[in-house]
Length: 188
Image (cartoon, rainbow, N blue to C red; front, side, top):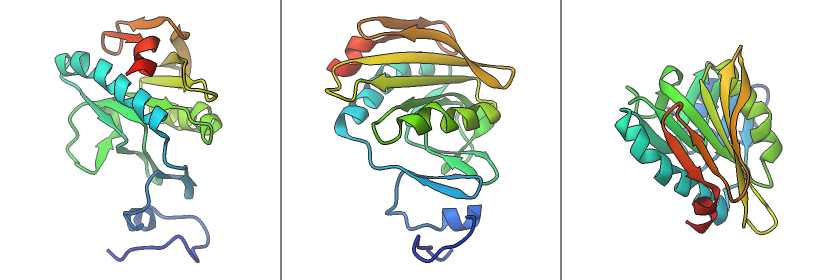
């Protein structure tokens, strides 16, 4: 497949054009023919995602699931996204996880993409039928606090299932047993 450049492209992107993009590009997502490009996350964002992965990995493995960070998931034709973290069954495709195997998506908001993560991304995850979504919202001023929001899919929309403000621990039995200390997320 020939590599495609972002320069000079007009009109909606096809999935084939998206997949042929130069691999040096990252954090580019395809949603209904439009490319969504977000800047590389900062180190504190990555610390929070890494800490979440550390906390979620043992209970996920016990449940026969995998925790993966920044992987591509094909939600539907012309919808390919890269959540910060997913919990999924072992995919048959090493490039894209099968959306039917994704149990939970997680986004850690950043100053540049908070609105995108809190609205459009949650909407496309819900439309794809992903049963759970976790949203981590750090304080962008100094990254010394973070809140967590766990959502469960109900009637094709996410409803809040649990919340933990800074200094609290989010505890839930579903989709896997989890105990997520917000203090651990910023002290990791």
